[in-house]
Image (tube, rainbow, N blue to C red; front, side):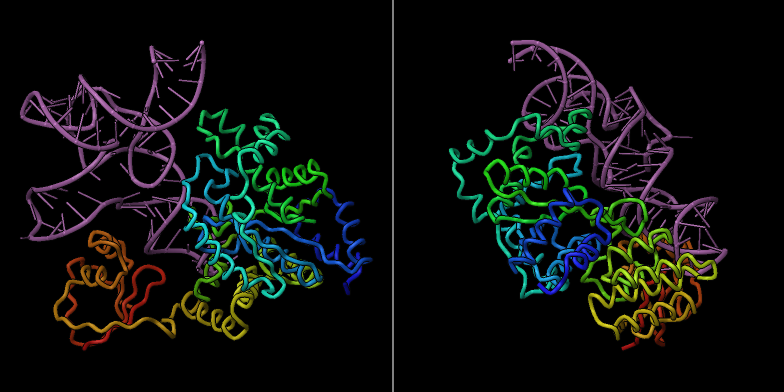
Length: 403
RNA sequence: GGGUAGGUAGCGAAGUGGUUAAACGCAUCAGACUGUAAAUCUGACGGCUCAGGCCUUCGGAGGUUCGAAUCCUUCCCUACCCA
């Protein structure tokens, strides 16, 4: 433990919405320093999502900060609870996954999360380890410690009752099981998004009721997606995936609304508190073009998942296409081996549109060009005499060669 | 078990025998404007097409009809009330 209490609290409080209760975290850290014993930091991961995005990175970044301060990260793969599906923020019962699916997703989650986490300081456990061993007798023992009212208090359930949406029995058990995880691994702190407040507090309750030292609950804000409104999520297609192509990560970052710039800096990068203060100052300066600071944001994010060189390339590639309106350096190539093909058919064939009708629409609306020249004829025939660069929509390019 | 209200395109939601491939909103895509911003405006938004049409869709399966998302039968699913 090389960090003082104040240093630790400064880093840990950065970006955090709520620490329940903060005094207890202070106490736990003091104790850990005194006894030179790292704290167990629990993070449950939802194995229903196969791809991680920047939204998930918020808690992962925080977990990484814990690791850097010397604490132990315990990643719980909810392979067992995944079969239920977290009701948090859901209006409908989630589809139940099979055990194999959750196991598989959990593995891939860890692979992706290790880009952010310190692999050597991460313990990974599957909650089926203990949950699958509970028999009905043991389960009754646990359930007896909670009341129906306590579980129904949760907003999601209350709302669903109000809106006459179904709630399945097994969903009621979700918080209980997740809470049991905290008990099983002796969590000192549980990290989560604000939507996890209820679940995490059940964990705290559970430990108390079984006579253990209860965990501190630390909640991180939910990051809005690129649309600037909704929480980042795959289903809303407003996400930036951490394993996406660098130029996509950069491009998507550039498309976020300006008001989110600082929030993204705080939550999606790992800048130090003092660097963040600089960013804030620059943003507040009226002479600053927000685009430039957003560029820096994109750079930082790409750098986090790739490296500095890639990040710089992402910037120059972006400038080229969107600011200078030029053709990017690297675009996929396609060798055309037939003559006199209809342009619409060609666009579908190369996957640049989903159907002939869609390709046709793109042409009609002026979204298709060859060598910079807009194509207006929907029946245009590609003669196939010489190569050309095809542009479809805002950012689909294809270098077409003749065999 | 009884009763009531429902199940429509990615989502929400109109439509209750015929110009209905199905209003409208959201999302999405393209264009304009820009900083690929956001906001705004315009347009598109099932598929095939020899452009004349053709094919597939309104929980599932049958049926009535010249014609069905709309009527009938049956099955499946959901919520609410009663027990």
